Image (cartoon, rainbow, N blue to C red):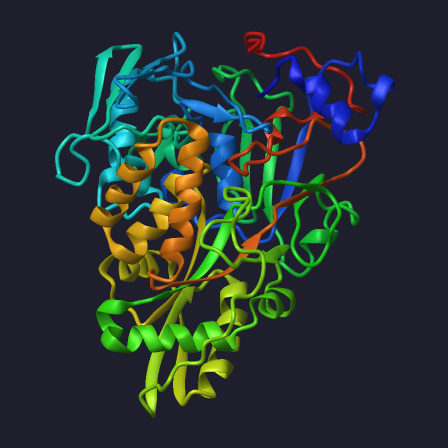
Length: 491
């Protein structure tokens, strides 16, 4: 929740101020500098592939519904919908007078177009699974979304999935509208006029439907991953999305996971013994500790523990493969902008060498990596993705990557048939354990987001989709400025 009644409670809980902060209200004015380890390569929320890009998407784009820090679904651009037709129909009633950053109206028609693009295979969104339950998904036409009028969107699913709205809280499902070569949104901040080579410059959106942010401006500063954690202490930034082994700062839900994908189309019969070789030779805990710079935890199950508390919590027993073809030569592709991918890839080089496999690590630009993954044109690939914050949908993300769209849809059909949310969660957990040995994916690690703030900044936290609530931040030491535009609405 942003700029509303919970800001005081959030500030008290995070800063430990107790009675000293109990009566304080958010103050308007000032600017913030946020240091991130890698500059965002894309501002399209449907294509985010790093924690920094997830942060930028959360600042500039809003979603129909939101997940609070307590995991409860709350209103966003629309009221929380009721499940109808046994979980096959949802009606989203939009807030009145919604507008994009450029002043154009944001109506139900724009919502339909924005969500429909997730189903476009040419886009190649890692969050395409969000569209899978919709009637007509994957058929190349309009999916089961309709603008009833300017302020109401009707979503029709091909099968019951009562928990589907929770997936829409992910920034990948944010409302966007193409405007030339860029996308405009409705979020708390909009891009400032002009360009900067060293920072993404954002200014407050006075007409943000969820309330104007307290600060007037925000700069996203790219810093060396090795030094970003010191940016606040050195006075170079007010906030930092930290890397390294630091345990300081506010910790968010660990949903950004990395997997090793095996391209079965290229590997054929070699895929299974190769997967066994990797599982038997890689100490995931050691790999995470010594070769991943970001704050991270080893991942032993398909789903992060934040989504599946029953996920495996320790290394699986090693089962060394009977044999591998001698003298094999393979290529591992990874994101050229991700330094952790490079170090992890080099470690895999060493381990597979013991099996007589010569592994070349090829770092690709993001667009080329996405194209190779979409077409299955790879031997091995490192894939990092921000999990959809609903267990069944997050699992469908991985099944779609490793086994295809139809397998993912059938999975969701089985999970959605559960009579209540607790049962559906249990089915998702059981299916995650079942698919762990079937999918050509090896879980490696999950990043733990941490946000470090200098003294004097209040109301910093995370929502349950893993997005920092930076738009809620206000400066306790800055003089209260007069709020621009209309007062923030209470939710």
